[in-house]
Picture: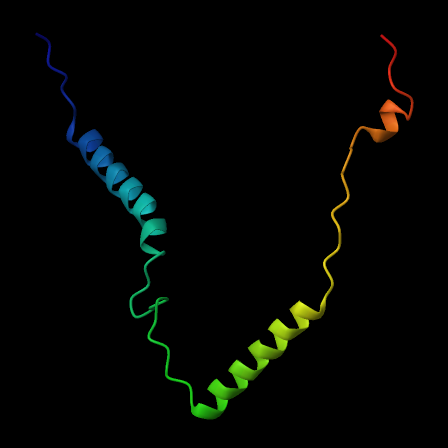
Length: 90
């Protein structure tokens, strides 16, 4: 069986290249997790004025939505211009 002999220089270069490649690939994954940043977050409790304002705003929004009349859905026919109005003859 033949063994491949590598000189020290090529082994060092190979190790350095592997290290650089692994650092480059893991850097982007590490950037996703910044220490000290919590997106789930514990939100500070709202004071009663803000909570009442949000509740009132939400009630006004819901009443406005109920005031909008429902529009009847039209039947959509994307081929209407191509087909024409006369039925096809068999």
